[in-house]
Length: 563
Image (cartoon, rainbow, N blue to C red; front, side, top):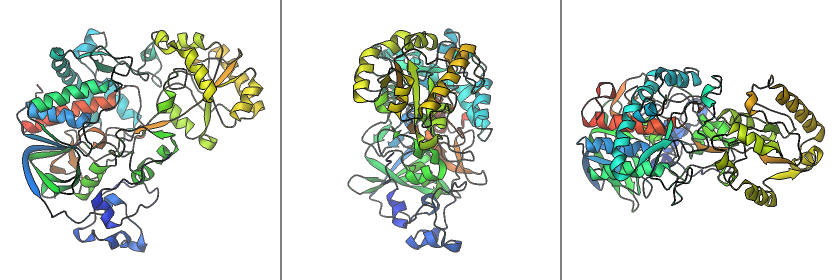
C-alpha cells in the first residue's frame, strides 16, 4: 500500500524532526520553547530522534491579518460542520477554517440511540448497553463517561436533525450501507450481535448507499448542516491550512494561525474557544507507524479528500501542551477496496469459507469488522481468499434474506466481468481452484472437507461461526475472491474529558480548547467494532452539536439543555 508520506505541517518540517520507527508513544508533551531548532531532534540522551509531535516549531510571527470570532472551528468535516451549525444558530459568531476546497463528507450511516425515529420503529434500548459494549470493546481503556455522552444524548440530537430536515425534504431511514446488519444479527450471541442503531439521511433519489449524483448518502446530512450553518451566519474559510494554535496549556488557547494558498498567515481569534475537528491520522505515515502499524498491511487507504487527514489537530494540540489519548488507536479497516464493491458476493457482505496462502482456514469468517480484517492482516504473506460454490444463491438467501434482491441484482453479469478480469477465480474442481489461487491442493482439500463437516453439523467448534452463516463448498463450479482490506480512518487523538475539553498529561483542562470527531481521543481503543454501526459518524454529529451549542451558551455539555 502506497500511503502519502508528504504529510507534515510546514512548521514541523522546519524542525527537521524524524520519526523513531514504530515507537508507540503515550506522551506528546512538546519540547521546551528553545527546542524548536533543527538540532533539537538529536538533543535527547543518546541522540534519540523525536517524533514530529514532540518537537514544537518556532512560533509563526509574520501575521498578515487578525480576525475575531466567538468560536473558531478547524475542519469542515461532519463534526466541524455540526459544531458550526449548532453554535451559529445559538447566536455565536463562528469561523470554520478548512484546508480543502470545500466541506468533506464520507460514508452512509450515522448511529444514534434513543431517537424518536428508532422508538417508532420498535428499537428502544437502555443507553447503558451501547456504553458498556463500546467501553468493553476497548478492554476498558477508553473513557466510559465520554462514550456515555453519545449513548445517552445522541437521541435528542437526532430528533433535532429530523426536524431540521422536514421542511427541505430530508428524512431518516434505516441504514443503507452493506455494513448495516439485518436478518437476526441483533439476536446473535454478544460476540457477533449488531444492533440496528444506524440511520441514513435521504431525499428519495438514493440507490442503496449512493445518491443520484454519485456522492455517498452522508452528503445529504452534511449539506443540510452546512446550509443551516451558513444561513445562521457561520463563515467557512476554505483552502486555508491551520498551522499553530495561539496560546498554550498554561495560558489557554485563544485562536489559531492558518496559512492561505498565497502564503499569507491569518490569525483567527476565538474569544470563547477553538474547536479542533481535523479528522484522523490515516494519512500520516509517521503516526501510522507509531500508533497503528497493522494499518500498513491493508490493501488501500480510501480516506477522502486525499491529504486532509494528516494528524494536524494532534500536532497542533501537542505543540500547545495537550496529551495524547490514553487508549490505543482503533484503525477502522473494512473488508473491501473501491474496485471490489460492485460484487455483493465478497467477504464484505457474505460469510464464506476463508483460507490463507497455505490453504488453511485462519479465523471466523463473519462479515464483522474488525474481526475478519484483523485475521487477514495476520496471515502468512498477508493474502487470503473467500471460497463459495454454485449454490451461492441459497446462502445469500439464508444470510441476507431482507436484502436478497438487492445483493443478487446483476450478480451474474458482474461475475462474468470479474472472471474475465481475473478478480473472480472459477474452477470445476478443488485441485484446479487450488492451482489458480496458488495454494497447496492437499491443504485446501483437507480444509474444505473439515469445513463441510462443520457446516453439516451446524457447530463450528473451530471458530464459532453461527450455523446460519456456514456455507459448505461442495457443488461445482467453485469460486474464489481475494479477501481485501481498506483503511477508512484511524480514530486516535487528543486526551479529552466527557465535556470534550482537551486535557494535559496530568488531566488538567486546557482552557478554550476542544476536540471532536476523530481527533477526539479516548472514545475508541484497540479496534473499531461494529456492534453499533455508524457510531463514528454518530459521535461526530452528537459532539459537534452539543459542544458547539454549549460553548455558544457559555456552559458545558453536562449542564446543557440542548435545543
